Image 1 (tube, rainbow, N blue to C red):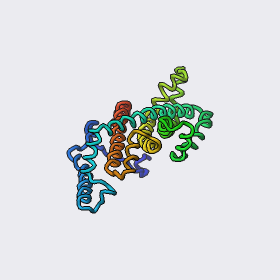
Image 2 (cartoon, rainbow, N blue to C red; image 1 turned 120 degrees about the vertical axis):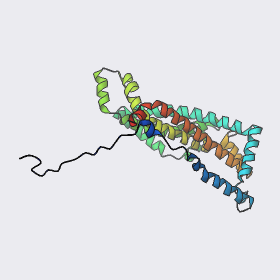
Image 3 (cartoon, rainbow, N blue to C red; image 1 turned 45 degrees about the vertical axis):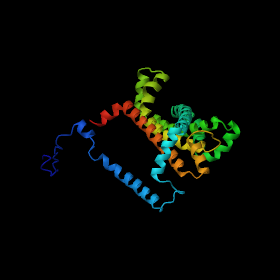
Image 4 (cartoon, rainbow, N blue to C red; image 1 turned 180 degrees about the vertical axis):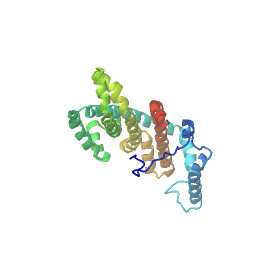
Length: 281
């Protein structure tokens, strides 16, 4: 007796039709991109009207026109470029130190269980500490100069990179390590050719998170015993109730954060070209 005679249902496959090309899949509608700017512009117009009519007192929040004029004045006087340069220097040094520490500790913890037992508990305890609680200790240990500010940024940066790189290392396929042993790769070659490339996507995610955290940590660090930088400019403006200067400083923080994030996204697209090509198939 045949299978059909036993009443087994026959499965018919329906062809899904031609698949779109990778170029068509990656194509994004750009004709309506300008619509994303409508709500922010409406918000600015409403803000300006509320300030002009007195509904929103200027002592609480300056009008957009006043903020724009203040920004031009700060640029022309050199105050804003100098503050940006000082803050950028602190972020870059702190980010470099914290990034190296985070990735290095992730390698130690990710490549062996002994390293994990030695490093991970300490990192988890430090991660739970509040920044404001560390400021008095850092001032006592390192003084009131640049060192405590840079160390606060470095400490904040290290945690997202550590967590993401550690997860990326542990997520590398174990079969690749077997292949490495088969071709007799050394430990250094194993890390260079298998571990680091396998963990790279997760590490880049941590890099983006670290940049955002770096600017948040800098805001906290520059509020204490600083004589230059964006945080100092904001703190000084607070003493004189200059809400226009405060908003200018916050907008610059946001713009720098978006710029650094865009740079990391560009690096991600360049470094992970293979993944985009694989997903487009």
